[in-house]
Structures are given as C-alpha cells and as structure tokens.
Amino acid sequence: MFAIISVNNNQVRIEPDKEYRFDLLEQKEGSITFDQVLLISDDKDNVTVGTPTIPDAKVEAEILGSMKEDKINVLKFHSKARYQRAFGSRAQKTLVKIKSIKQ
Image (cartoon, rainbow, N blue to C red; front, top):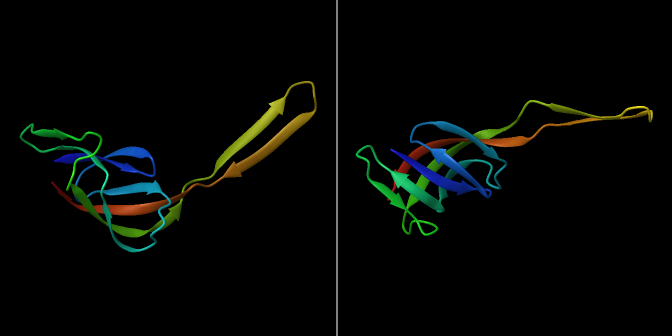
C-alpha cells in the first residue's frame, strides 16, 4: 500500500512504517496528520485518485526530530574578471515516520 501526499507544496510517495525527511515543518514533536492525500493505492491494484484531494483520507505520522542535511558548497567564478564568491548552505529537515494510511 502506498499514497501520494502533498507536504510543503511537494508531492511525496509514502508507505507505512517507513521514515522520510521533509522540509522543516512547523510542528517540532509529537504526532501529525496529513490531510492532503492525492492518491491511494493498495496491494490489489485498487487506485483512488483525488480531484485534487481525496476527502476523508488521512495519513498519520510521528515526528522523530529535526536535523540538518549535508552542507552544499557553491562557487561562483567569472574568468578573467578576478571574481570569486563561495558560500554554502545546510537545509533543515524534519524526520517523520509514517504510522498508517486511512481512507
């Protein structure tokens, strides 16, 4: 069984009992419910597609914590102009474990 949900304007394919990293969510700990379920498919090839979402469908999850991704280094360089600029960033993520998908 899997579902496609919308989290922070990103569509994510999820499965129960697996861990996922999402962009930083407002809620820091505890359980969370995702209401924007776009598609649900079970093991018997039954697919339910929302228009745009499926009413009364929910995905329950537990927030395990927040973390930072690895640093991404960026270098801007213009040849023959003596221009160099280096900077980096670390994206903040929320680690979430999916409990169940309810239709």
